[in-house]
Length: 405
Image (cartoon, rainbow, N blue to C red; front, top):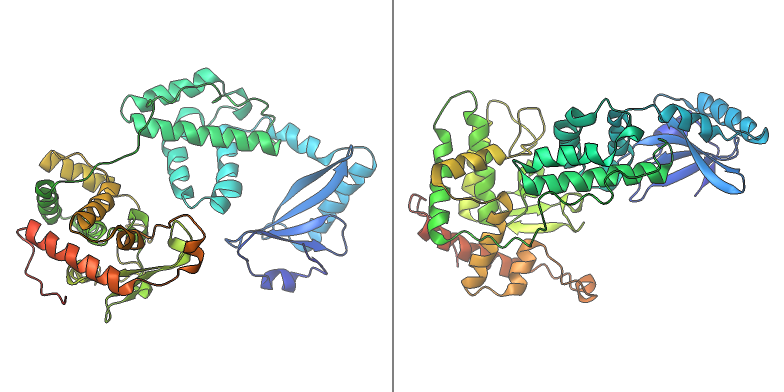
């Protein structure tokens, strides 16, 4: 890691890199500025105590200017020189902290910097864990407390209860590894997944089910006026998932600057794909119509997002729309099943599996993928046009669309 003469101007100009970077201060031994790929800047102090290198977190760059960070680091180094571990005092304070404080630290310092799905972690923390034992001291939570929360969740959502258990396990393991919260045992250890063993999903909608689901999506325009716009945007995003076979998060987060509507291509940047590779998706006439409908819905309040949510970002949860469809049709499915359905119907129409994998942005998992960067644009376009024509036949109320072979 580089050692530099840190100044306020230099720190302000430092930009994030692909990997977390630390800049050590020439004036204060061990003091470093850590910058995450997301641009978060924080202070830390590396020191040796009892023969082991340790790191003390000092605070955020915005809240702790350079001069104060140096003073805080020198005070901690003075403690080390006098035989005191500066982490000890911090640990003493942390042992009285609540689970809410621990979960907040986990989200800010770990999930946001290492997980693409950190927003889902945040949702579960806020919706399930904070109401369960947010005010309880983190180190006092035991296995019985964990089981109580899991059993309540499993009563209505067994699979989600498994996700909740996994998240709690990660939070407590992270706290133990950091050694800052006085947690010496993981209360999730030896608890059973409340939703039982999960098998791989293989749900594919039949042709009849596709027709019913599409009809129900069209029906989202009906009902109360207050929520009609967001119901219709949710419906549009689900239609686009079925048309393009792309992941829900990628479709819902679609931005106008990713679209070349004239040529009919959508380029998903590497920062938004699961495998970290930019991905080109051909947009058929039906897909373009769905996108245009979304634009008209938001005409009075334009957004950078094609499917904007009520709070300025994009629509991040379409579960209510899916539940509404389930209630209307009686068909049980998940959002991800639309992607699998499109892929399955494409292969059943004779489209090569390799082309379908390119549409899904899947990799073969061997060294060939590193060198085989051919875009497959022509094959992807033909495949998605074929699927669009087949979907047109399945969905009776879809307007006739002329496509080029």
